[in-house]
Image 1 (cartoon, rainbow, N blue to C red):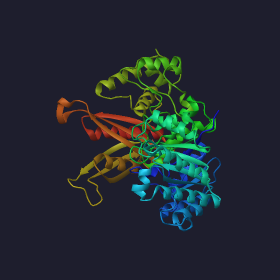
Image 2: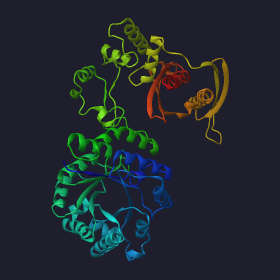
Image 3: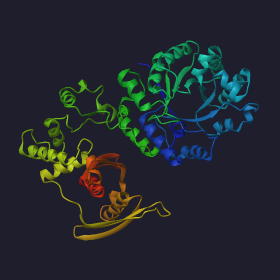
Image 4: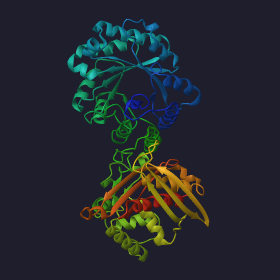
Length: 523
């Protein structure tokens, strides 16, 4: 079983994605999650590029104890016309205090001459002197051959000479970078195969997803002999992103039998992806392989029946192997058995032909006729079942609410305010809040009032809000369906609730209340 090392660049290359900006605290948290996942290398940033990364490398020494991972500082070769021992960026790599450093250099002759403005000989000298200097100062050097595949296709001999220069200078590994993200799997396989025949040290692969093939290219590189895979844990990165390591790790282990991380760590895959997406302030793609919310979700009745009889009929791996879970959706293509299976989650003793099952199914059909859709509203369905079983209790009573909208936003960007009056166990609470729109204001006012009684509601985050018009022919008198996705930041659990009405505010209120009731019902 060949060993494949994973090199995670979420904190450096991932931070180059639009909309992502990690604080030092964010980076320290992600380091801990990646270490718990058993990642071999964590590339944490460029200590010579900005004060934030400098602070990180100072703090991480005292705040994180690594059990599985090695921290890597990232930088470039020395600048042209500057002595290596006088290059501040190179010196910052030494001062970062990491065992490993990763430096990049040009492997495309065009980039060396036209972008850097140096001769091909000077480019090789910059690579050799930088690696030698870092090695002589006790560092283990990984060399990223930037634009390697473009360079190889343009001038194979020179690109291979770049790698041989890095090897001769003392690099422990050379990484082939598809910097433009334009390679195809067959190209990657053939080129990596050639490289492995021409160098004696470890060969790595670093791909971008501009053609949608970053994962496939990484897999083919490993098949060709690469033993180090770079990427970001959930695929974030500049432009269309980097190779998705959560997918690659599972592919390599579960489908190719490589030794990547300890088998018991693989069960942390989904939770690690969720935690990193939360810190990155992005919504994890529901359709992401292995770790997405829909990765093991079944809707068609035939598929559901097949999975129940033999999970391998419609699942390529067990969901629990990567810390995910199987889900069955209710829809027009799912039958009675699917509904009963969902009911059993909350009432295990309910049988297919029992009166309570018949009652719940009848109620589901009635609500669907009214415009409700339970396929993506597991929270509302749970409350429906609880009400039918008699195990539901309301946690508060609404006395009234009022919404005031302004034609223009105020200085803070708010254009609506809401007041809510409610009672809990005979105690009344009145709360008001401003928001960006009436639903946002209502949501804030409701939570503000309820947090007096239920402080844990501070952990709730409204992740998504969708409105759909159901009867377009009725114009402004049409019914609307509001779907809300809520997340508990303390547990990362998610649930969805739905409300239907001819009044979008009322439909939103129904879904908002259900989202809060789910949180309180499961505490």
